[in-house]
Every structure is written in C-alpha cells, then in structure tokens.
Length: 189
Image 1 (cartoon, rainbow, N blue to C red):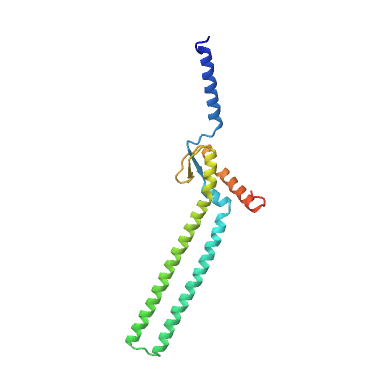
Image 2 (tube, rainbow, N blue to C red):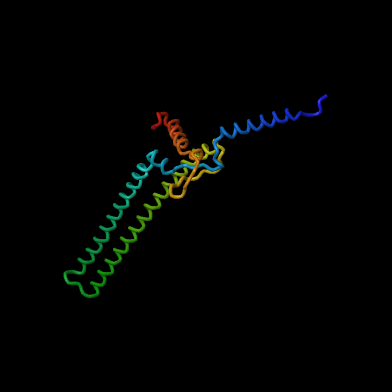
C-alpha cells in the first residue's frame, strides 16, 4: 500500500502543471484586461467621414436656404416700411426704420448662431451614433481576447501599447463581415 507520492512524482506533477500553465499563458494574448481601437482609422477605413460629410453638407444647404429666406423677409419688411414713409421720412419714421433694421439684423444673427449650433449638434450626434455602432464589435473582440475594457487609441494621449492590445484590424474585419452578412454582397477590403 502506498502512502503518498514520491518527491519525483510530485516534481513531475509540478512540472506538468507549470508547463501547461505556461503554454496557456503564452498562447493567449496579454492584454492586461484593456484593449484599444483606433477609432479614427476605423472611421476613415469604413468611409464614414464621406458619408457624414454628405449628411452635414445637406443640412448646411437646408439651413442656408432658410437663412436666405429670412434675409429676404427682413429686406422686404424694411422696404415695405420705407415705401410707406414716402420720399422724405421724418425723424420718428427714420428712428422706426433704424429699429426695424436693427431688429432684422438681430434675427439674422440669432438664426445664424442657431444654425451653427445645429450643425455642431448634428456632427456630435453622428459621431456618437458611429461610436455606438462600433461598440458591439469592439466588445466582442475584446471578450475573445479576455479583455474587459475597450478604450480609444488616441494618438495624442496613448504613448505606448503592446501590439496584442490593439484590436483595430479585428474590429474592422468584424464590421465588414457583419455588413457582408447583412447585404449578402462581398465586403470591400
């Protein structure tokens, strides 16, 4: 009857367990739980900038047309009042004209500021939508690599990062495969 394992058997068991652990660690990517996606590269490689640019340009054109209508309305109102005062308006009428002109300019400036804010909001929303569309792909790739956190690889802030922690290529591939599966046509490379 045996009492236990001999020291050689224990040593062999320790070596087997250690070697197995080493091989498992060596084969799995070392991400320290954090992976990075170069969002700018994904944005550019997918052509999102061009699509968003077209959407913003269309909104700008719409707002410019609205601004021109407002300018015409202000101008017509001023001309109508000017005509009603005749060839030589009195001091009160001149003050009224100046007040109407000032009011019209204020409306135009306010409209212009609102338009700039609307464009900024549109750009912000489009970028937020883009980021949200990338999240599921980045999260899935991160989970496959054993990472829990996905961060944006910002060139201005990220000084160094192990290559295993950069998942941009995998995210691009997953997005293209996802689009290919949705459309049934080959993905663009």
